Image 1 (cartoon, rainbow, N blue to C red):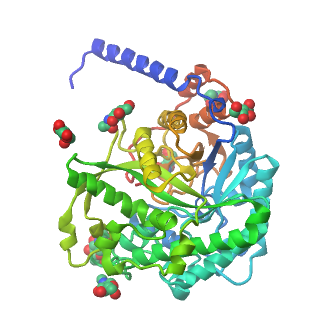
Image 2 (image 1 turned 180 degrees about the vertical axis):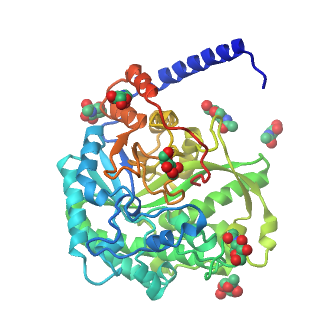
Image 3 (image 1 turned 135 degrees about the vertical axis):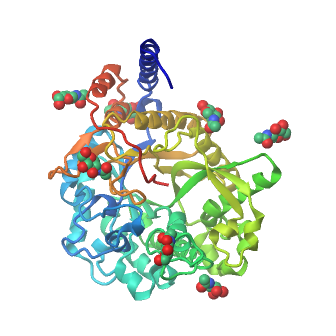
Length: 521
Ligand SMILES: *[C@@H]1O[C@H](CO)[C@@H](O)[C@H](O)[C@H]1NC(C)=O
Ligand SMILES: *[C@@H]1O[C@H](CO)[C@@H](O)[C@H](O)[C@H]1NC(C)=O
Ligand SMILES: *[C@@H]1O[C@H](CO)[C@@H](O)[C@H](O)[C@H]1NC(C)=O
Ligand SMILES: *[C@@H]1O[C@H](CO)[C@@H](O)[C@H](O)[C@H]1NC(C)=O
Ligand SMILES: *[C@@H]1O[C@H](CO)[C@@H](O)[C@H](O)[C@H]1NC(C)=O
Ligand SMILES: *[C@@H]1O[C@H](CO)[C@@H](O)[C@H](O)[C@H]1NC(C)=O
Ligand SMILES: *[C@@H]1O[C@H](CO)[C@@H](O)[C@H](O)[C@H]1NC(C)=O
C-alpha cells in the first residue's frame, strides 16, 4: 500500500484512539465483587508442565517424558525436565498466588512421582512434595483443586501391559487414587480424575500425535503400533470405568469424612453448523456426541450416545448392567477446558472408508472457527459460543455443576509482557460469566490457563498462555508478571482498574512479536 506521511500520521492517531478505547473497555468497573461470594477464581497448571525435577527424588518417567525425549513427534522441541522448576519453587509460586488473590490453584499429581513404577511402594519424597505444596496452599487459604491424571501415565505401566488399552489400568488407577484420597483428602476437596479424557483418546490412539503415539497406518501420524478403529473406544471405556471405580471408592471410603467432590474433565468446543441445512445441524449434534456425549452420556445415562452406537457399531465397547450402574451418576461435577469452536459440515462419505477410525465414524468435516478479531496465534474470544454450548448441555443432560478448568489466550512465548490480547480475553470471558450465571447456568468456578508460562503439551516452549513469563535463559527462572497478572490481581482484589497502570506497562513493552509456527490446537 502506498501511503504519504500525512495519512500515516492520521493512521497513528487512529491507532492511539483505538488503544484508548480498548483501555477503557478493560479498565471498567468489573471486579470479583460483582460475583456471588462462593464463585471461585483460580489458575491452572499440570505436573509435567511445571514441576521439572523429572529425574529427582525417585521420580521415574511417564509416557510424556519418553515422548518429549524422543523429540515430541517432531512437532516442537523441548521437554519438562526443568520446566518452571515448581518442584523447588512452589513456596515462591504460592506466595505469588496469594498476592494475586487466587481462591484456588488447579494442579495435577505426577503418578510416577508418587508411584515411580505406577504401583507398588509409595515414593516418600513424592508424598512429601505434594503434602508440602498442599500445606503451603492451605496456609494461604488457597483451595487445592487436584487432577489425578493429566496425560502422564507411568512408563512402567505402558511397558508392562500397554497402559490404557488394557483393563488392568482400572485397578492400578484406583489404587493410586486411593492413596491420594487417603493422604491428601483431609485438605483436598475437589478431585478431577482425568484431564481432557477425550483428547487423551483421540490424540494418543486415533490420530497418534500424542503419547503413547498409537494409531493405524492410515492415520495422520506415523505410528509403530496401534489400531485407530478400535483403541480410542477401548481407551475411553477404560477411562470411564477407572473414573467410576475411583469415584465409588471415594464415596464409600472417604466422602462421609472428607466431604469432597469428584469430577472428570473434557476439552469442549463450540459446534457451529456450517450451514443451516438440517444435515449440518444434525452433524453438529453428532460431533457434540462424539466429543462430549462419548463421556457425558455414560456419566449421566449409563450408555453411549445413539449416534455413536449407530456409526461405530460393534467396535464400541458395551457396558454390563453392573458397569453401566457404576458409571452412571459417578461425577459430582464436569470440568471443561474451552478455547475453540468448530464449523461442522455433514460428511456421510467417510462412513464408506475401509479402515474406519474415530474421525471417519463421526462423519463430519471440521473447520476451525475464527471469531471476529483474532490473529493467527490467538484463540478466538467467543464467550457467546461457550454459553450456547453450556445451555445445550443443560437442556440435554440436566443441571450439574460445571467448573471452567481452563480458558485463556495464546501468545508467542517471547512476545511482550504487555499481553493485551490475554487481558482482553479474560475480561470478555469473565464479564460474560456474569450473564451466564444470571441466565441460570450452574458454573461454580473459573480457572485461567495458565498460572505460569509452562511447557505446553501442544506447543512446547513456543506457545504461551501464562500470567507470568519465565525467561528460560535466566538461571533463576524468575517469574515476570505480565499485564494479565496485574489485571487479574486487580479484579480479584476488587480494585477498579487505574488505566495509568496499563499505560506504564505499555511503555515497557520490549520483546518483539513474531508469528507462532505451531498453534496449540
Ligand atoms: C472481593 O469481593 C468478594 C465478593 O464480594 C469478597 O468475597 C472478597 O472477600 C473481596 N476481596 C477482597 C480482597 O476484598
Ligand atoms: C483393528 O482391529 C480390528 C478389530 O480387531 C481389525 O478388524 C482391524 O483389522 C484392525 N486394524 C488394523 C489396522 O490393525
Ligand atoms: C511417515 O513415514 C514415512 C516414511 O518414513 C515418511 O515418508 C512420511 O513423511 C512420514 N509421515 C509423517 C506424517 O510423519
Ligand atoms: C438459513 O435458513 C434461512 C431460512 O430458514 C435462510 O433464509 C438463510 O439464508 C439460511 N442461512 C444460511 C447461512 O444458510
Ligand atoms: C462477532 O461478535 C458478535 C458478538 O460481539 C457475535 O454475535 C458474532 O456472531 C461474531 N461473529 C463471528 C463471525 O464470530
Ligand atoms: C526467545 O528469545 C530469545 C532471545 O531473543 C531467543 O534466543 C530464543 O530462542 C527465543 N525462544 C523462543 C521459544 O522463541
Ligand atoms: C518499567 O521498567 C522500569 C525499568 O526497568 C521499571 O523500573 C518499572 O518498574 C517498569 N514498569 C512497569 C509498570 O513494569
